[in-house]
Amino acid sequence: MKKQLLCTSAIALGCAIAAPVSAQEWDMDWGGYYNTHVGIASVSTSASLGTGTDYDGVDVFQNGEIHFTPSVTLDNGMTFGINVQYEAKNSGGAIVDESFASISSDTLGRIDLGNENSAGYKLSVAAPQVAGGIGINSPSVSAFIPLSISQGGNQPWNFRQAAVSSWTEVGGNNDVQRITYYTPSFNGLTLGVSYAAVQGTNAGSTNNGAPDRNATVLRDIFDLGAGYSQSFNGVDLSLSARWGTADTNAVGVSDPEVWALGAVIGVSGFQFGGSYAENDNGGAGGVGDQEGWSLGATYDIAGPWSVGFDTYQGEVTTALGGGKAEYEAYQLVGNRSLGAGVSWSVYAAYAEGTTNAADPMGVSKVDGTVVGTSINLSF
Image (tube, rainbow, N blue to C red):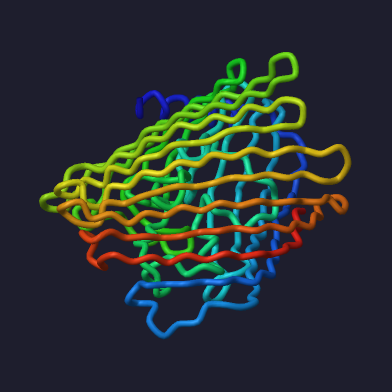
């Protein structure tokens, strides 16, 4: 497989070099999004880490990125470009979230090289959600309801893992340096494969020196994904499936795996769909294994409004003997389009995290409700 991909890349590059020189213009494209939430939360907790805390009241949550995506299309039909994404809000300083180069054509498909999520992740679909909600199929709800242990809650809250979101990765590795290939679409079907030498984090912290495959927990990370999107007589259908694995250097731990399925169907302004994902993290007795699912529906009302309801349910095995930490959340959202790239949303969300007697924290519960509004800009 790797030899075939390298040959394909070499042929594509050879064609580009052999093409006659001409005055193609670069498309210096850029864009991004910026979402600003104001919400009022009511939180209760019996978690030991939450003793003496007060999370009730009004707060602001912001989430934004600026994307630089210049590209040029040559006479031979090959398109070369880059995608650099800057976080607009973080814990300090400008952070490059994702950064990769791409080579594509209608007949070749697309090759991505750099810090980006895997093909399995990017081809996945999940429960539809109306724009402007707080995002319960993600860690975003913790902006108002402190579910994670690091915030005084009771959930491990591992990023890119199925107990928190069906948008998951092998061992939670996120935006590592990868080689990814996507096929052209065949009647709506797109296949993808990704390889990463070692685990890592976002683009801003991984680009120095040769990777020592013996000095990292995960190495040789492979992902496979399939996405299908087609319309039939007024019915829109999207399906996805993905699987991934890696080699581990950790003693007493088996190689991790991830798999997920998703489906969304749209008809007459309605969308229905969901997803299911599992992370088998290889721990003894299944400790660290995670699973979760999303389910939701949206409706585009005639005019500027859309409404939707969705839920996410996840759990992680936290200890031998049946230790569990469980997360569940529900959300109702209404969104009004105000103009090109501008919308206003109102929403109400409930989320809770529970642990059982076999969990290291013992029996505990953290739950909260947030009622909020948001202004959402995309450009």
